[in-house]
Structures are given as C-alpha cells and as structure tokens.
Image (cartoon, rainbow, N blue to C red; front, top):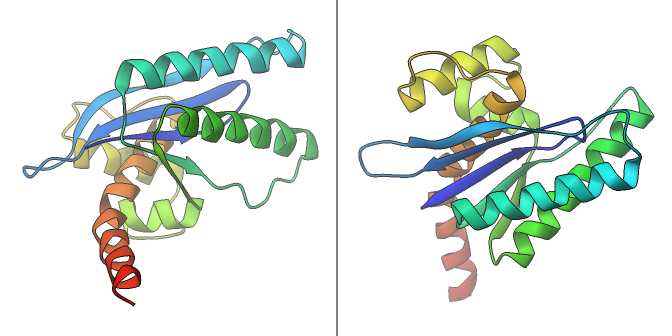
Length: 168
C-alpha cells in the first residue's frame, strides 16, 4: 500500500510517499512543491492544485495523510496552510484516495515516540525508519514522510475499529 503524506503549505508543501511492506516501509518519493510568494494568491493555488493532481496521478496512493492544523500564531500563515490543506484533501478525494488527518503531536508520537519531538528528531527518525543515507531535507519533506509513516503505524488499528463497528 502506498501512503502519501502531505505537510500542507502554500509556499512549501511537503510530500512523502511511503510503501508499507512486510519487510518495513520504503520511501517512494519525498520532496517539496513550491509556489512563488510574489505571485497572486489565485495563481499560486491553481499551481499547487495542478502539482498535487499530477503527484497523485503519478504515485497513485491508496491513502493520503494530511497534517491537521490546530494553531498558528500568524493568521495569514494559518489561512494559506488551510487553503493548501483543503486543496490536498479535495484532490486526494477526487483521485479516489482515502483521506485521513493527523495532528503534529500524533505524528511525532508515532514516529519518534514523543509527541514533543523537535524537527531534528523527526528527521532522524524518518531517516532511520526508511533506511535513508541522510535525513530528508527540508523539514517539510521529512514531516510529510512522517505523516505517511504515522498512518502506516495507525492503519492496523483503524482496520480493526472499522471491522468492529460493522459487526455491531
């Protein structure tokens, strides 16, 4: 199963596609989609949408895991992150993917064993879990891969819960 993690952002939108395998997870693609901060908002959103659509068509993930935004100090940043998140979820749904959301603390707990882990710890754990030669950079890419890994860790429980609900 391919899981695509998305760390939403309008200037930098991290993505990390991970394959869940019996021998352990494997990195398929990790990177960042960027838009020009000087461009008008509607054009940046259209560019990000097209790039997300292309990424989904290329990778064909079964699940897209998007970071849930809880709090931003800067309202402008919160708006752009929310817009990018909405685009990612809508494009994933349109592509026929399951869509899930995880909070930053859930991701850090699943990947690093500590909901308060810093960016460096998350990068090093993603490196270790995926057997990479170096930590993924920038942090947006590592965070996206961590989202995919978080879903792979939670997926078996989600399946059991769904099965239990069906039996009721």
